[in-house]
Length: 166
Image 1: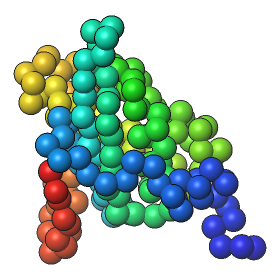
Image 2: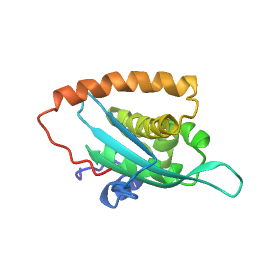
Image 3: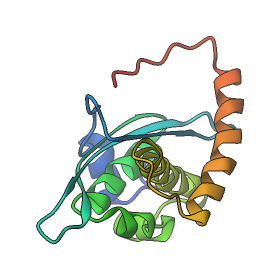
């Protein structure tokens, strides 16, 4: 068996040449999430702009991920799925959308797709909060859950310096 042969070609494509990797200076929203069990950490940055139809859309989106093949691939894929969408449309992207568009993920790696969805929702939450836009109840509850996990990760990895250029 070849190394990584349990990953689809699409997963490997996004792992080897990730789309939209990096940071956005002065991002409109930043989502920082992690998984306390595996140690993966994702930061997702968005720049939004009102389009001609008057809707706020994700104009630019980038990510930084410290994690495995699946974590990097799902981070890359969610940026492709969210770019150009309204914030409301982006909040409807779920892990099944990511998994399907990547041609599947091994069962032990499905949590990476949820991490990518969480990073996007946190970036949107951050944008709403900065702009004093009412935060939908569902997004607020998700943020509260993620905030607890992030505090655990920050405590666990406080000795590790992760660069952040925002």
